[in-house]
Image (cartoon, each protein chain N blue to C red):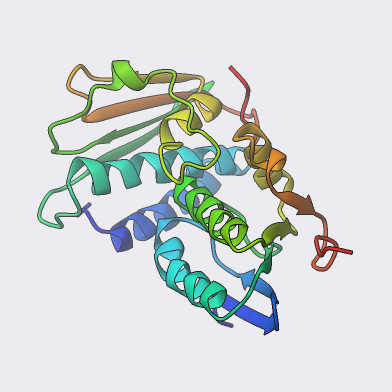
Length: 110
Length: 131
């Protein structure tokens, strides 16, 4: 299975990761996300159900993506994060800026 | 290890096995996070991604404490200035040192700033803590 899977349906995209979101994956993921936004995605759901670790490089990429989406009037949500990753996001104050849901789909706007 | 991202991945795989062999599975999230952050800083900022420059890394288990030390060959940095640094939300970098403070019980830099030593109480689980 690929470590990055992207499904795009018009302006909405779901990005599923299957490796730790650390510097090595962030390097490959960054251009894919830039391309996604260039192709018109404005709402991105990041599915971390299969991710057991996120480091500061991964956090930086999530924030950069959220900043890019905000510039085009969009947003990003995170789903499926483990309890440890959720706590890391809380400690790093990301939960004030991202919607962090339980399962894919819950983070989508109504 | 050489200063490459591939070497970080290999070392982290070996560290994961070491944690398992030493009965430290409960602590793996915090330990792996500290290890990755410090190795990444050593490779990227310390040794400037130069594979010819090596990074030394040591993990030790005591009775109550686990320690990680990472040393690079760079010029170091003025860690005293960044001791309490917190990145603003829109900033996309500069969170590594905050992660050190949150997930280690003790963080010690050498004077030059090219070596960091973490100590963490064994059995605390993956949690960080607000200091």
